[in-house]
Image (cartoon, rainbow, N blue to C red; front, side, top):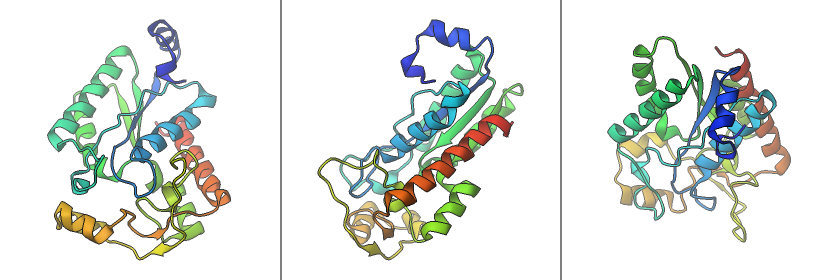
Length: 232
């Protein structure tokens, strides 16, 4: 159930029998040959696919996050941690006030992970609420499936290359890049990061077969849905 396809009266009706919802978090940043909104697209779609059979409402995905290290790539937009933390807390407060007591945060961007501390802080002031933070690509089952298919994959590689993140008329190169250590993002300036990464892929193949990515997606959706059902 997509909140953006409901009116307030329909949400009020849902709240009579349902206190779960999903809040997806995305980002707008370079993803090599894929959409700049890749993290937003994936967090949004995996939330919707997981929630649909259960009738759990999904709020619109927050399209901006923490990605200061990609500042040299046009189209990338970052928030400061202070701003982002406040936004996440404010959204949780507003959602909780309406009556949603169990909130699954589906995060699509690794750079957003520091905000988990803001969620924990928020929970101290809202003891009647339950919040799960779910990095969908880094969850146990998804990670195991990635390793089964091809462990050499990371940002802007095959693990994010789905039909819904590709751009019309844009082809990804059929090569496998050496891996870049993400720890370097904390030590290098924007210009040097772009110089090293060039197109922006962190390493691995730019794409794999649709069969491989469909398998990863199915595992990830099922894992997200399991959290909605039994993660509380």
